[in-house]
Length: 85
Image 1 (spheres, rainbow, N blue to C red):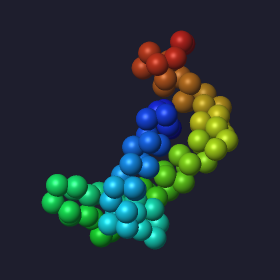
Image 2 (tube, rainbow, N blue to C red):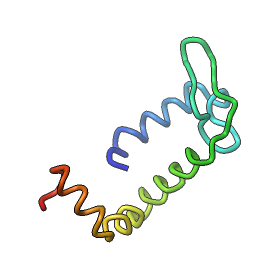
Image 3 (cartoon, rainbow, N blue to C red):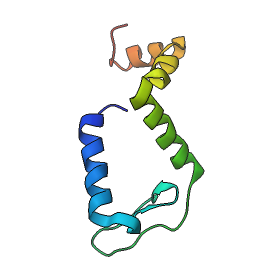
Image 4 (tube, rainbow, N blue to C red):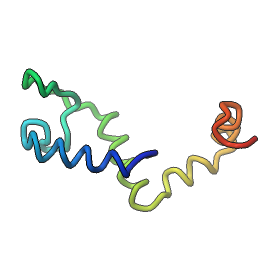
């Protein structure tokens, strides 16, 4: 969500370099080791969910807009020093 300018090229390079070994029916596998060829066989719904939310946020920006519309989110970011309070 924060760095699509570097994440998208990295994802493209992984898909190009490893193909169907790491990119399957629901997208990228949950984990893989390029040194050994190991990959996780599990599909974990919570990981697929955040991928979908991230894709929509990249497309429209709405996920972040809706999240930040909650006063709790803004307060938490302000307390963490990420945005002005």
